[in-house]
Length: 288
Image (tube, rainbow, N blue to C red; front, side, top):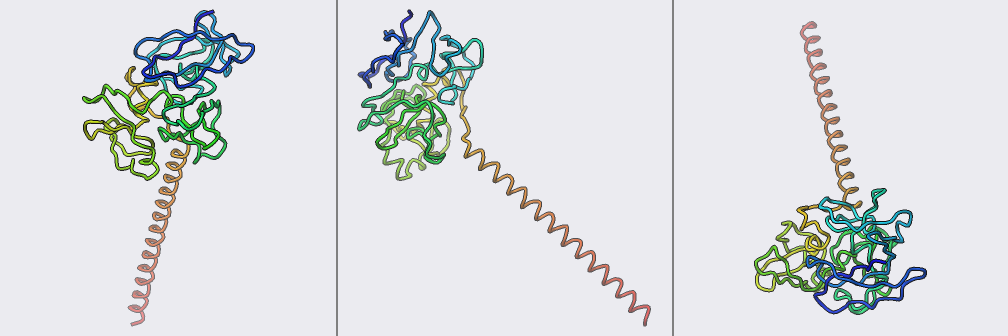
């Protein structure tokens, strides 16, 4: 049996490991290289044979632990990833490392200290508008951690972040997460992210020295491997946003066609009026 992996610490353990579900054996732990995500992410027991894992979401084939620079879509959380992953060698099924090893419960996570967060393999069935991550603001389309008391939820990737991070892309690396009240009051829309140069929803990090701001959704590109493998600005479009863009395009084309049709109609009326005027003038001239 090969030991599973747990992510490198920058703080004390965030969760208590639950007993392994039958018939899977208990899990041992080892460490991964230094370029691991920002905080410890205790892992769920999974059966690992050599370099292969038998995962509950893909029982038909074993998953191999590999590291490739190409972009992929995680079959668990439905978000992009690059670099280290668990991948099926027989089909296109791939999981982020942290999604494949996600624990059943998070306790005292720094983003939600008041309640436990349970792991769910599917998003909440409360409608598209309510199925958004409370950290990055993007929809939760697959794996997520959710509070059964207050409805707080977040992606597994966002759970890898912390309230204080060191961001190598800024001269003052220490960034602090602004309070959630900033988000609820709409104040985050006043901040332009220095990474994507946009204003958007979701939590925001701010430099403790200067007026530098970074979206949480941009910060997690360091966790999911996109930044390290040169995939910048990659983001999954939401279904709601895509539908809105399609609807707006249809409306624009409809209005354009309507105006064009009206224009042609007005032109025809003018031509007919001019024609009738000429005919009347000709008749008057003949009579006179």
